[in-house]
Amino acid sequence: MTTIPILKEREEQIYRKGSEPFNMQCEKHSLAGSVSQRACVFCGSRVVLYPVADALHLIHGPIGCAAYTWDIRGALSSGPELHRLSFSTDLQERDVIFGAEKKLYAALTELIEQYQPKAAFVYSTCIVGIIGDDVEAVCRKVGKEAGIPVLPVHSEGFKGTKKDGYKAACDALAQLIGTGETADISPISINIMGEFNIGGEAWMIKDYYRKIGVDVVSIMTGDGRVADIKRAHGAKLNVVQCSGSMTPLAEMMKEKYGIPFIRVSYFGIEDMAKALYDVAEHFPDQPEIMEKAQELVRSEVNRIYPELVKIREQVSGKRAAIYVGGAFKAFSLIKALRNLGMEVVLAGSQTGNEKDYEILRDMCNDGTVILDDANPLELSKYIIEKNADLFIGGVKERPIAYKMGIGFCDHNHERKTPLAGFEGMLNFAKEIFNTVTSPVWQFAPHRSGNEPEQLRNVVIQPSK
Image (cartoon, rainbow, N blue to C red; front, side):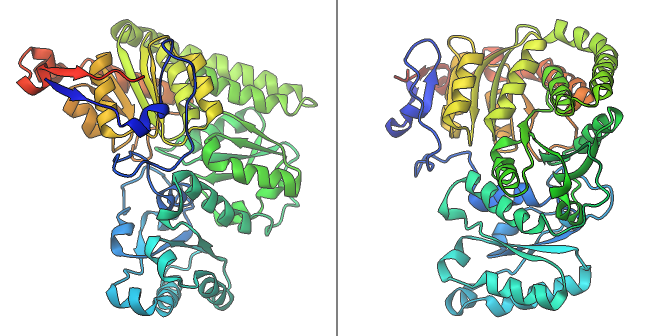
């Protein structure tokens, strides 16, 4: 018999609804040796900052940290595409021993001269934090000489989690905000925060707000521009989607500039509609905004609903596992899957907090497994136990789904298809239908009855 055990130190980060008191640990460093799906601090910072399309992004560290090159991410731009290039100082052994400040200075000056960016972000990686290069001093010097903002991003991978990388990115953006002119900004205006234009989603959402009469000052950071970020402090409301990544910046702007913020989600019909209504409610002196929002929602739902009904007939009753970066996205996915008649049997995130998991607990059915900072073995274990038909995750979860012989939907930054907004909900439903009903799964060993002996005899080790 083969067992799939849970590491003892991980047991309190796993909760099965209905079978035990809720006492979920989270917001802690990944357990050494557990092969966490979670990314490092540097990865968190680049997720937020890389979509700024007219800025230079330079990684100060070994070349391996720059493995994030052209076309690996779906953050699209309507103009410049400098963000899709990945530059590195390519630190070698000699640089580590003697320091690499001169190398960083030379790289920055050469790149700025060649590409003429509007700003530059310099990302410190693990080795830079160890050898102690004064990145801030180099950035100040080059910024003064070049006449553009050159911003250090303190994203040494070892010093925390992906969530700490979000904070490092927010700190860098905060240095830009407040340096631009705001005289011509409309009194009915917002910043869209935590939207990264994966597959063009920011364009769709910006258009929705335009149709209901709301101006968008900046999008942080999908299809972002340095000039727009500089004047973001002139908006009247911050609308935060990816709360884990952008809440620190929204809180800073509230304290410094008095700009309130709301949390929204653009995934699924319910949450997309609510995102429009919540913004409209913020401008009560303009009742026509709410009227236009209601009309837009009616029109869009009427357009996509007939196709959604047809898809629901094909996928209803299927079981889905969700593992995403931020828990707020999981909330929307649960609602969207229920609209398709599907059951969520596993829900987890990399960066959720206690409040997030309490909401997940309340949203999920009895028996649903809730995971914080999971590893591949745990995900495989519960996919088998729950007999899932679908796995929704990112690029690191895709191999797990295919090895388990089930459908997969990429809901992370690598995809090229928009899944937000009303059109995105239809795209999402079509992708679910195509992968779940694919005839290829009949050849998966555990579905054909020809599974190997070691899989046939797997025993699920119950968690406490």
